[in-house]
Length: 265
Image 1 (spheres, rainbow, N blue to C red):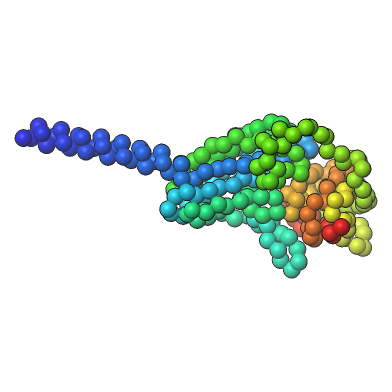
Image 2 (cartoon, rainbow, N blue to C red; image 1 turned 30 degrees about the vertical axis):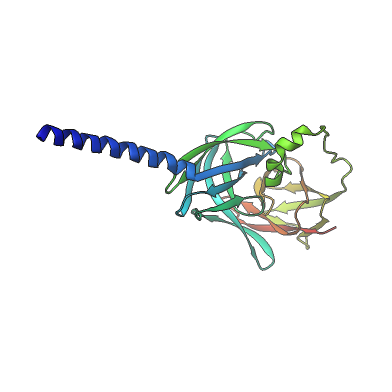
């Protein structure tokens, strides 16, 4: 009788472990990651971003609480908000994923920020990204690096696009608006600090500075470095309308130095 009870106890333990392993495995299945991508960046840009969609197929709310990748020193979650007619970006601790819903991390909204890149983001390459969920555990994905104009719609239709005849995008005929800026001691030496273009135009900034700086264009999630040795040139295709601040980041300065305003055609 004792032997039978002992065998029954062992059987229950094994069965419990088996059920627990199934529950753990199914936890990953409840959270589905799709349409992930990052955008290619110039080699001198230090921060990048990842966009994707998360579907929670479970019956309980979950939270994306952390993320890591070997190609960046740190990873943060950022959210864009509209305040006083301006688009601002702020760090958030976690991203809630309600049950039976989809959350989109897209340009101009929620996104995953890659800080201090250890290698450039080159179009056509991939890199690993691990997402840590409060209930579903960790999930590692491979993030493809797409072009500068990529978005969730581009990613979703990539397979369909590949079936169509290839054609290289023609950006040489796009109208370009040039702006000359001089930055001295962290300030733009110009009375007007708002630069206006129309949607579809190329905003080209030619910047000279007496100090090296890191500038971040909010809304477009573009960060670039300028040095004090030569004129720095960078271009932005104005594909989103609004008023977007350009902030200076660093130990010495951290403030908005000018604005890019994009108007409808």
